[in-house]
Image 1 (cartoon, rainbow, N blue to C red):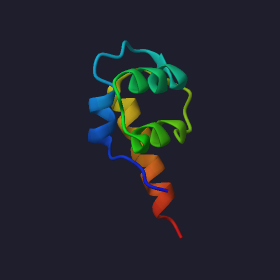
Image 2: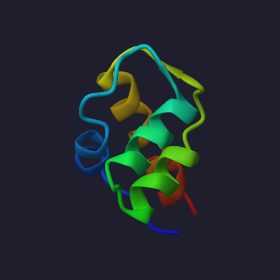
Image 3: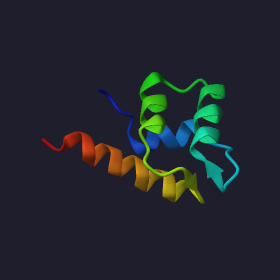
Length: 70
């Protein structure tokens, strides 16, 4: 399954008001016309609440690391 990198996710979440819930991030990304990869990445985030874009980037990095494990 392909996932977006943190930069792609960040672009899709421009203008989000934090703190935000995962579902809010997904909805915002959809409204911004995010790619399917970005949406899949957001859906795979473990955390449910985010206080800043840095929190989102960290969570995206964790998804990426999980995907690379054998």
